[in-house]
Amino acid sequence: MVFTGDIVDDAVFGTDIENIGDLNRNGIDDLAVGSRRDNAGGGNEGALWILFMNRDFTVANYQKINEIQGGFNTSLEYEDYFGGSVANIGDLDGDGIVDLVVGSYRDDDGATNAGSFYVLFLNADGTVKSKSKVSNTSGGLNTNISSTDHQAVMVQKALYRFQVYRHQRTIR
Image 1 (tube, one colour):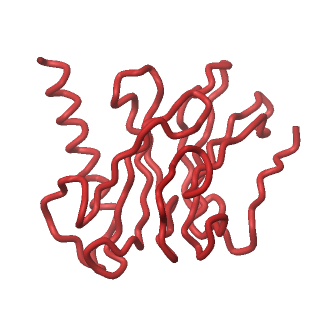
Image 2: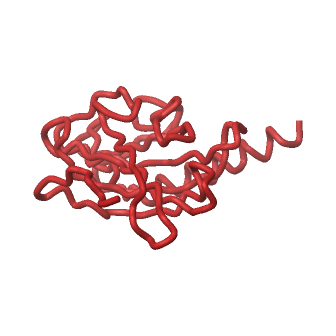
């Protein structure tokens, strides 16, 4: 199969790429690929592509996640750059399917370009089962992120908090 995803001009497809293991359980690791300036919703909101791979490293199938596709169902704003970063955080909710953190580093919650990220709980078909947003105004971050903060630091802090949370859940 030839990859038939519609990658528009200036989409910056491949902004970040993460191995997400064998999401569709066919014995071949799959990829999550950011496209931070994707325009499918209009205005460089961004997107994340789940690429189901073949053994020869070609794309067998795909699922696009943005404000209008993939079960994300979240309104993104002009130049939020959803998909600017992506991290595999393992199976946070215990359903046997990998979950992801996806950065939206120019989200304006609470301050211009302060940034945010979404924890995406996935289905095996690459669609979003549920999500949680962390920003200045949601997700219980309990700090004020300014436009000069670096999203990578925010994601690292969040991953640490999720690891602590997961550890606390397992010892109960």
